[in-house]
Length: 128
Ligand code: SF4
Image (tube, rainbow, N blue to C red; front, side, top):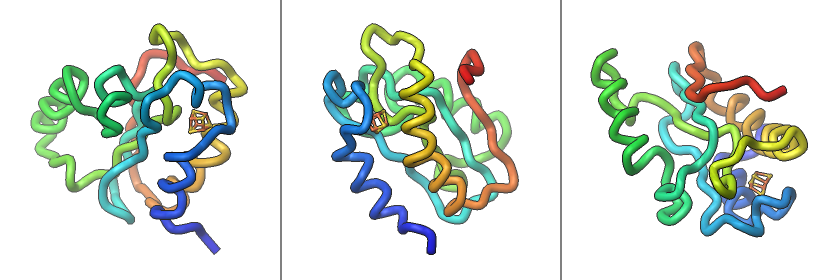
């Protein structure tokens, strides 16, 4: 049986399964409707997201919101999440073990729950 999103988010908030927990302020959970036709996966929380514990806020959030407007989509019509739930020190690239751990523990479960028809990835590189 699939875990509930509340359970997954609670695990994310307290997660210490990779080294990134040592340097984060807040792990950042996904947000949005479940199930959702559109799932948007960003890379990792930025500084402001780390401070506030919210996804896609600050400068990157503004760019993202304007991109959504251009395709006539509202945030509340989507499910947003990150590949990596914790801030990467000095905005470095995630290491393979961090990606694998976070994806297996959380992202794969989110996809299972959200059941998206379309997944949009935001970021600049494929790591694995
Ligand atoms: S990046 Fe993911 S696996 Fe690592 S501590 Fe944060 S939530 Fe846990």
